[in-house]
Amino acid sequence: MSEHHGQDPLGRLRRAGIPVDQMLEPQRQVLASLTEEEVEMLISLRHRLDEATPDVVAHSEWAGGVVW
Amino acid sequence: MTSESTLLQLKLDHAVPALASASRRAWARPDADRFREFLAVCHMATRATVPLLEFAVAECRARPAADEVAARLVPFYLAQIEEERGHDAAVLDDFAVAGGDPSALLRRVPRPEIAALVGAQYYWVRHSHPVALVGHVAVLEGYPPPPAVLERIRLATGLPAACFRTLAAHAELDRHHRKELAEVLDSLPLDDRCRSLVGVAALHAVQMLVASVDRLARLDTLQERTGTHE
Image (tube, rainbow over all chains, first blue to last red; front, side, top):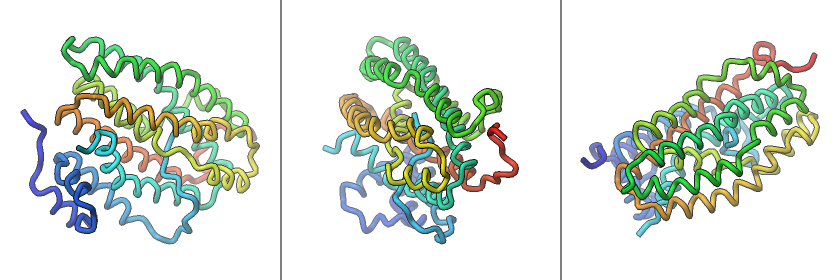
């Protein structure tokens, strides 16, 4: 049984504010192949980003959380 | 054809900005209590590293002989065990140098975000496939702290340089580890299910790290003690 792919991943990501139309084709293809779970998680993380207040001055980026 | 590591990276490129945003908030105004709590949370995560890898090796070996992905993961996970062994003790040492009480930390109930981060791996490794751990490691080793950020935190907190030792070492080590992980990932004959599992595991790691770092950003230094010396 193949992995569950939901309806229209690109459309859902676009509606969540992810700029799929500005991406190069290879990237769009990757996003178009995402499973339902992966789409849900990316949308959830996008919402987290959108809710953050932009009042923090950007310093050198550290995208990490804990060490392995 | 796009490599497996590139596929994973393309997925993470859209997830990691949320973690970077949380990190910016957490470290906008560094203070000693917040850094000690960060080391405490790091210890909660790293104390699980070797046991989780050992569990994954056992699960790989229990898979059918025809499972080539599981077979190829064993030497990688075994090598990771040797490289990561002792890192939790090093973090605990740094925590003590920063003024934390190691015995109090070991008595604390670990944070739910870290339990969910690590616990999900036990679930997926046992009940789906041990390749899930590759997604987890890709995130935890993928974004080490830039030296400039560590220096800024050190100067702002006034804490000794020695308590940044493990984080600084990871900044170097993880560059090498990321390349190794990409090579291993690209060598695996993943089917759609395993590819999706690696992606889901990686995105879950980002979600839990965002939750953990967000909580660090909200830390009330009067309410959350890490057993610091008075």
